[in-house]
Length: 288
Length: 224
Image (cartoon, rainbow over all chains, first blue to last red; front, side, top):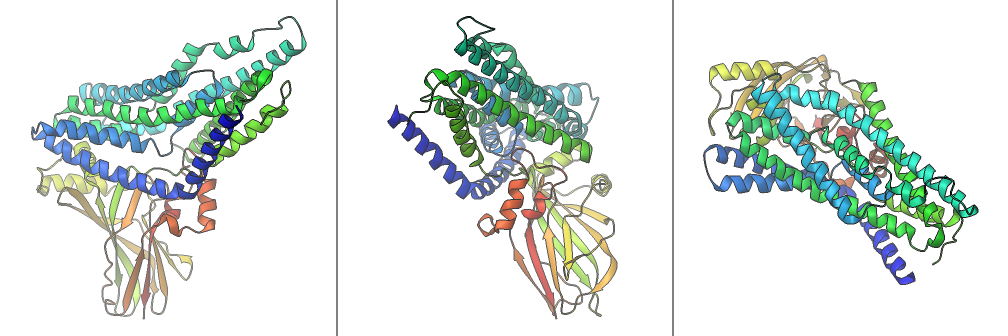
């Protein structure tokens, strides 16, 4: 146990130091890489319009990599997934599945928004769809994040109070720690997916508007799903690291693991609450 | 290492550790969606007075496709606009939004130089990229002889990443002015900039922040 903890601690601190020392360089690289992928997307969209078969693979590769790199930038989805991973008892496999489900649902939202509302119904233009996303769907996603943060805090409190009572009394005062951890797991997963999917990625909207105009909307939709897969890969890594962080924090807890779990949930919830409230406050201060 | 059980001490220590690791992830920045190359030309009179600037933007190929698709005026690859399409593009892009912050930010002797609203926008295709130029008059012409002009090329939210790629022209003062462009370089950041970036928050660069200014390409112009 001691060796395992030391190795994990060393790895975590080592990665942290790399991030702290090289973060700006990493971000500068991701911005530059994103520019390259955007150029590749533009070129392959034109080639696809001209009917070049290889353009489909090129476009999907470019959008997959765009999604992967773009996800490395700021975004609330990662916070929610990381916090959920840290604050629940979900396995790495479940969290990775949740990350992919969220990313693909987000891609589907973009496809439905542009495919139906912009292209088929012609209710709004592509630019208005982007405005709708930024002015209405973005704050809506913040409100949903807020709800998830509050849920994590309350569940953490429940675990702490229930766990402490069960430690000091021979009979149960409420749900067990395990029960509290599992409360509403499916509903919470659905809430996480919804909170991320409600706000489609601007890059995906751009891509779909262009594809629709070029008469290759179906290919744009396919490429958007590839973009979602790329996002899912990165976010899956974040979610997995959340699970490992929780396990790291729980090592050596012994009988006090309930307290670690409860505090972790509260910490994760408070992080989500603070970030969501800050984002909402900024949104209402500056206006849509 | 063994943490105490049956108490909050062990979990608290571990959470502090988790928190410390979490903060190691450093400041996240806004990520740009649109990349614009270009620069500014400075119209300086024979009397040494800076009167207006001409700003050039060349959108990246993806944004070019998006703008022109949205306006339904996408030309064939390698072609420029028809006259009719050009009118549509110039009308749409010449209607600057109320929160437009200029992209070219000028300081002389440390003082911000106010610019009038953009005018006379013209558009053309350069390869697969849309290029626009427009004029901005100085609210008050400024004598620039023996002064350093500091120029930042940015949009404050960093949704647009502007890059200073074009060397400036100086009008009638072409022989007496020189310029030095300094592209943004992460390794050149000062501790002050790093601290400012850290304050921006991890996941969203607030719209009222000035992330773009912190990450901007800059230029210093000296006129004798």
